[in-house]
Image: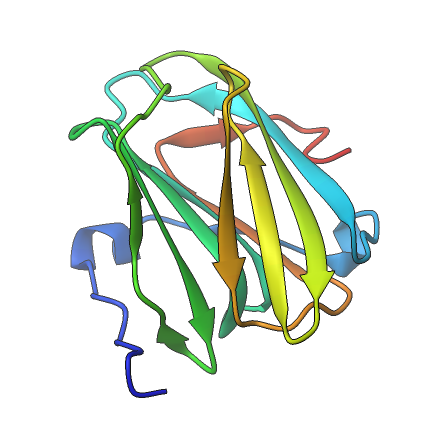
Length: 152
């Protein structure tokens, strides 16, 4: 891909453990279904990330609220390379807040449309060229404590 870029490395983030759930620990969710992530934004949170996809190298979406700057950044990853980043100027997340984020996944031809519903019930759509298959990968990283029931 000519416009793909390598994901920037963040040594501080790399030292934190990433919580990853594979399909053996999740209910299967197929095309045109959704996944709900519930949890609590940490006190003194700066950012967190939720990634959904086939595996760590092929993500439909990497959803990254940046509380320090009041924005949400999203990108996809295909064959290990990050696609262009989309920035949403509104970030309804606050330190210590309990939240529910819903990701609606819709397969279209050779891409995936992800509709994200935020805690304030606003929604935005994100298009990814990573083709929809049965999801096998969900990862949560950063200043976010995911509740034990994880998904619905």
